[in-house]
Image (cartoon, rainbow, N blue to C red; front, top):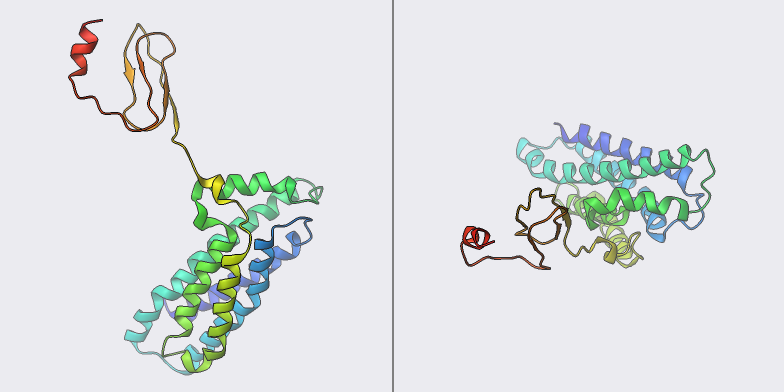
Length: 226
């Protein structure tokens, strides 16, 4: 896909995010990370527009297009993810019939959306990753002369995002293994060879460990003795 078209699409995503923020910024207690993300959106749009103009007036070679396309697509991917998460929050707020005035009412929903995907999907992490890609684009020789003032501003913004209080604490992403339920009938034997907890409901034998289990013998011999 042509880089100009991709950048035009990214700018449209930024506009969509800005529109979504108009609906959620009024939420009392909105985490600072959300505010920091919104604060940097104009810088992102401005930098993208500079790159767009450079591409328009300085026709890049096919080799240059191939060089910058992965970076542009990385920006697009992260912003698209961010947009989807913010849109989900906005929709949840609407479903509450406008009664959601405080972040405490939406925090659980945000947690449910993000935690299964991992830390890298917190709004501030997505924005930081996108801005790092945008910085890489800005320092490319094709854009550097025009985007030089942007580079320092992008670096400051990335630093600020790294220092903001996480929208979800790191501890919420830590797991101590998983829970697996297993039902055995007629005194069957059950064991789990990965981390987790196994419950044998009817009867038989249960082996439980907090770490991986390795059996150094033929388990069929153990079972035959029962």
